[in-house]
Each structure stands twice: as structure tokens, then as C-alpha cells.
Length: 95
Image 1 (spheres, rainbow, N blue to C red):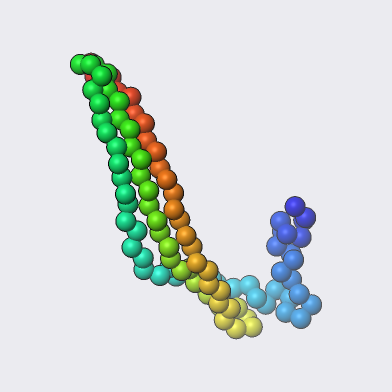
Image 2: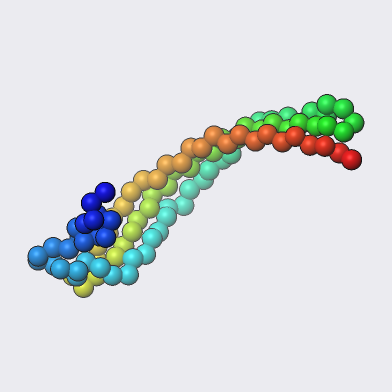
């Protein structure tokens, strides 16, 4: 990675200098994310048990970033999508 990118100096321009820097706010659109979950618990004997679960969630939202700079308001927007599959395994021992 070049030092210009890691330091952020690539954003400097001859015309604006550092005038685009300023306070930034973030706003996310409302969204609904249902979770689907399936699993089971099994008692192997009176002491040992095992639990297994698999979950899936799908979330889609829009993020808008607004920066108030010396030059004016700079707005950018992007769509965020999350769709993780989450697994869970538990082994238990009862005393």
C-alpha cells in the first residue's frame, strides 16, 4: 500500500487543498431483517448433551454519508447488503 493512500494525502488537490474535510454524519434507511433458525438439542445420556443450530439473516439497507465542508455539502450513498450464515455447536456436561 502506498504512503499516499495510507496517510490520506491522495485526497489533497491543488484546487481545493484540504477544504473537503469536515464533519460527517451517517444515516441508514429503515429495514426489516427476518432471521431463519433451525437446530436441535440432544441429550446423549444423563450427563452429556449436544446442541446444533444454523441461522440465516438477510439485511439490505442504504447508507448515506453527508460531509459539511468549507466548499459545500458532499453527499455519498451506497447500498449495504448482509447475508451471513451463522452456525452454532455446543457440547454440555451436567454434574
